[in-house]
View 1: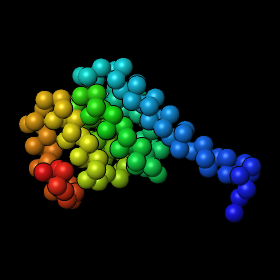
View 2: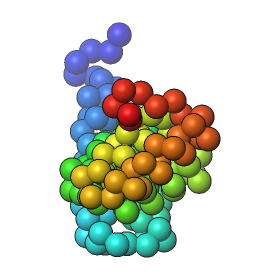
View 3: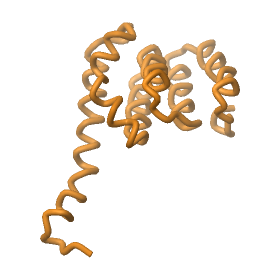
View 4: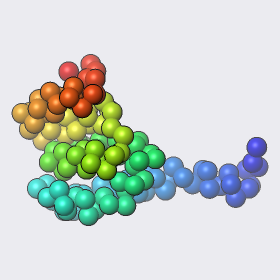
Length: 130
């Protein structure tokens, strides 16, 4: 096993911090483009992150959760759609975060619509989804 002082261990310890910084930066940029940003504007912000999310879908989850906290349902919808179009693995947790963004943003019709679409996407709703 690597020693604490080895560069391999140091890089291993830095990775989560770098990922958190990337998530925070992406979230800040998404907020900056505004609540009614187009899908193309969201893609421009996330282009580099989407490739990273293929290997680390948790980072996408953190971004969607942040968008829910900031009540940005339309951007969350674009993010979820871009994830699917870019072949980033999506699961019930990603959908729940987007549903939460819709709910917090007062877009309950979109929340219901996304919940209904989950079955067609082969995502099984859980107790949080319902």
